[in-house]
Image (spheres, helix red, strand yellow):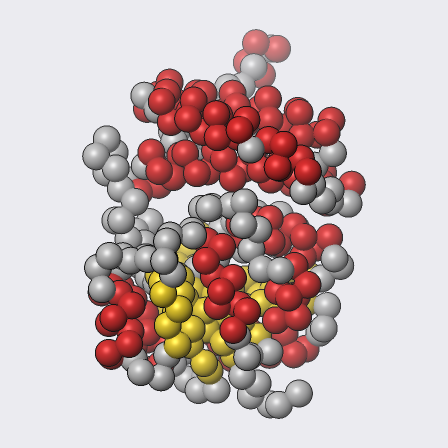
Length: 309
């Protein structure tokens, strides 16, 4: 393999023209130069696609006619010529050394399918972590590098996931195929946008939109990737989890709309099930608590030890 193989930078864009301009500028300034850049624009109404055409003529732009959510990236994956695919959001960018680190890791072992970079979230002012126990079981989609052959084997992102957990599903299927996911301490900066903030809550992490799509996407994962005994157990836990949040934040309408969406498409979810290996299923079973600390950050698990003395 070439010492500096071609890396395709795939960026998904939606109504963040200024953030996208900053991301593209940073991508072209970084120290790894053998790249091609593909921007998939999810039918933005703010002139994002036109800005790319006018200001970054070396970048390829794929303007979609409608917002396809996260699976819109599949259009970019199919056009990618690079051996490795760097995935970014329109508001995230790699620091110098990050792309090269990803390339070196993927070149080092064929069984490595995904390199998950360290994501520094400028809204939270801390590094984000996602599904890491003894080793990574997922990655954050605004900063990861994927082996192209793996992407082709899986057919890209599962098109049932409009937003959130598309990376979780992709990662689980990656591990199920026998590939590995490795963590890198090289950094991608995520300038977390205010686009998803709701009128009811100033935090983008607590918005109705995020609640709704998280509800649906996590449910799809349980139904499609776990055997029925595990899926039923986790869906009961998950429904209770979401109901607690709905009660606290008055998200009842979102709760029932998401539940109806799941029930309407349940047959499709079941028809396309691909069950994970049993040991892999058990790993993912550990991640769902009855109380979601994103919504209840001050919650403390009650202790009954004082009553035993």
